[in-house]
Length: 330
Image 1 (cartoon, rainbow, N blue to C red):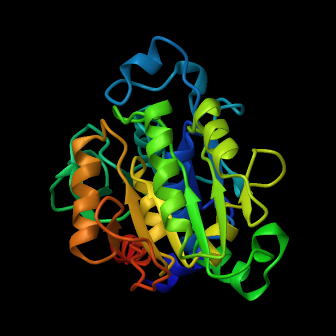
Image 2: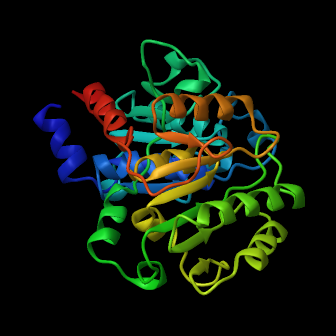
Image 3: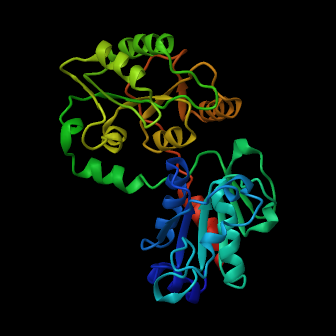
């Protein structure tokens, strides 16, 4: 990267790197991880187009209310009255806005899209997509796992253990729950199956820590909590801070429901043994992704393996993606 770009992105990050999403957590996780690695003082902007413009995304124009000339627009000029040097965007609603910023900056703003934008790759500067999306192009970067910003928080949690998770006896089994997505089912039958597998695995561990995601059905979580509650068990009930990072940091093995690309990517970055629980109805792309992780030895099949406290080689694609963007800007 040239000294000029380095000054703009690394030393004077405020307003120079924008993140554009509609606020969905899955999109935010990936964009924020990349933006923070490039410029810790990036500017996060949330897109909320009205109908009918929201229906036309990603192919149509932006909502006229959000014209860059409007001071209240999410793409109005930033600090220092300037346009960003880099936009990191994700989600179909954000794509027209990223294109609009590039246009109003006279093409000087680089546009990076996270995940398949459903528009021609040539319309933006760089696209990152997971391998299972099968997206190709001269300006397309693909990795097996997705980027995230948890490397430092996990390291900090290990260096300075605090909270209820750090007080649990070791070895500790962590359980991370997702929820219905892409056809994956989370009903009573699935809950009973997962409970049986957790109970069987628990015999090799001194404690258990479980956390749900935003998508975990309340009834599903309640069923697991009623069945698994014990003195050596912590189950987050969604009150107070989510101990997700602490569970990733301190688990000696992890059982993770395989419905989320981000959750699986974060789990395999920890170095703990990861055991995938595949809920029925799992999307074909996700099944392929978990198969690929298993072939690399990063994940084990919960149906076929006893859960044990093991260490594996961490997999984290974040730095590779950030480096590809730096090369674009050089």
